[in-house]
Length: 615
Image 1: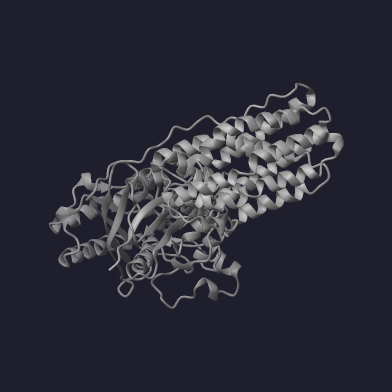
Image 2: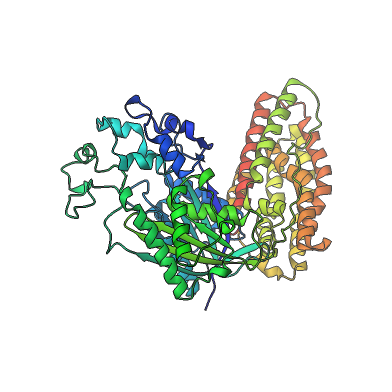
């Protein structure tokens, strides 16, 4: 039997936290009046701040799918799993951005994934747990080796005052008003794998138990109709038109608060059943992550646990409801993310997750066991971002060009830090396989370097002899670089034929194609901009990266010399570039072309590193 581990978690909470006093600035005041029940509801639910994907004009700043994708991206940045390796994407939400297609398809479309299986779960709070259960069982069965699960909610746009004003409501029914002060926006994502992390903590999923009680109860939290007591009442699609459904209030989100006590009782009854089955051993629980919509419900949950002789002590409860708000399907993800990275967990801890849903009564539980070491990997200090220094003659044109190139470099290096492979190098999370892939993909582009420089030199007129000489000198220093890279690969115990038979990734194709295209033009002096970026990487970054990789992977000099060599050699290469930029024919028109080519080269080089393994 396989095992399933949560190996990383990411979240996305849109925009700045919104305090209780600010809520109506975002949701709006109905009929221009402040709510009469808001303060009472907020005192009961205990929420101090939350996040909205709305601005103060009630305009959406993100879509639900975008929030989900941003949470996934953070989870993958914290993982060694690459986006294009993901085999399954399972999502849970109360309401996607569109009725059709499924939410998972919309999230997939926002991500830089390859083809993968998707699964969309639409419910309320338990939909996030459904997504986890789907991924967990597939990994357990050996059907998948990894998966990404997402819970995401965009509730605030349902509560915009303009919706109620359009219905000409003089007052909003309490079953709707109640929810305006309860729900908020956000997303969380889990990376699940069939192996735990080699460093840091993983959460092994022991079991998940999810039960619907809809056969016993009517709708408690719902939209699409007005009466939960009449199962035959027409739903919103049965109205003659959408406007009629809206004017009747059928599409307003509602909650029958008279049923909420039974939600609590049903959830605790399920808890006792799991104890009787031997799944839950109360004394072994170290942490309880309990999703509840309001602090008001914590006391009755504890009271029922106590009456059944199975109370979990206060110090073991973990919740961030007060600061993150009630994010429905995303809540358990957002709780687990904070707990996992809090430093509070230790190997062997048992975490019980409890997620009840009031939609039509679903109760769900998940048990996790903490595995791995609490010792953290090495984090290397971040260097200040600065452009490689250019020492060239001072005149208005050269000064303008230096300013442009410096800003292009700063933008480039800032964006590089967000590229997954670069982030791993700086965070001390690079694996040996990551490093081998980097060598494989760089070699396919590096071997082209001297060729496009030679082509450029052959297209420079004899009247620009000094510039042609500079390009030729550059070719002489570059044409053996790929051989150093191959020797590093071989020193890692790999077969040379493997790296020599490799192919360019899609970013390398774009970069090389651009270089050869520019080099084929008459007098391609603008390629000095490309040399600034490429030699700047050598002068400023390559040697530094080489030392970081050597340290964290315990490599020998002959396994990393391609990088460390460039950290020294490209100082001389840069001097040759400076001499070329001092050419008397350099005017503003040429300077603008050099800057533009530097900007394009920077973007394509970044793309090359982003697309490692994507052929």
